[in-house]
Image 1: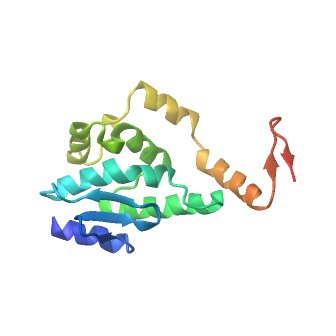
Image 2 (image 1 turned 135 degrees about the horizontal axis):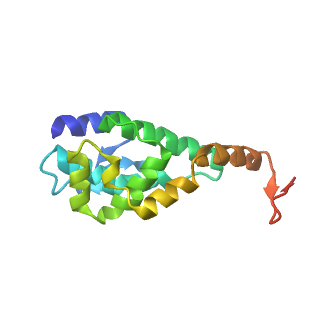
Length: 161
């Protein structure tokens, strides 16, 4: 458990453990979880998925959307590094929707023990959501870049400067 915790804190360089025995993983957004009842590596991995997937999926600490996208991508890269996975943006969204906020802890345990088998998380709703969003991030990046340049989007889907 200690080795995994060290690796986690090395990959998330700004992380620290406070006096309440909470691992503050991403201080910028106060993304944290309690280490109080963590007895092994499985417990830490479950908490990481349950309590940190939201920030990695939807975090918006910046005014510029381009910076928010970069922020999420960087944290997803670190998250994947720690877990030895290669989740993409849609998959981390799915993880947040199905496991975030510890809504189904038993499923989280099963997911980790399976080696992160995403098929365990897919239901009719999540398949529908994923099918709507195949190129979400490329579109978001383009829109963010235009917004950063001062463009605004009207209701008729025209671009105004």
